[in-house]
Image 1 (cartoon, one colour):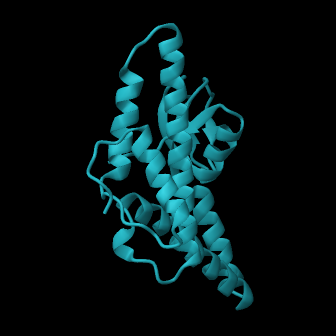
Image 2 (image 1 turned 30 degrees about the vertical axis):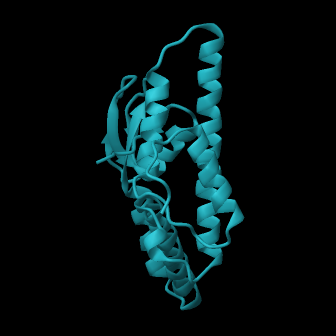
Length: 185
């Protein structure tokens, strides 16, 4: 288990080095990502002028790059190994892997339906996906729209939050008229 020392740029750098130098998934503090989040949050709250502010911004950037690298390394190890210790996975990494499992299941479902001639199932799946509801926040005003489910939505003002069909949400997001809202518990 890694040292219970408080997180700083040096301890993060050491964790990344250790992870790169060992082929197996290493055990790290279960609160590692949360502690990193606190570290960056505290850095962002600090206000400096001039050179000190540039140093702070650089430190945040370096920390962000190291975190990204660490996640990438650990997930790569997991994807290439079948004998990693599940206990070494952090909850946040399990969350990422869960979405990958979901993607594999969906791929198998589409492949199976296609190979087995279940076109009605595929049509139903596609329609359900187009009309599934997505929460978005509007970045610009938008007049009333007719959704993929043939229901009317709007009009919307800037900063309005709405639940609309996926297909419509994607079109608005692609045009930078809206952004997806991710609900966090």
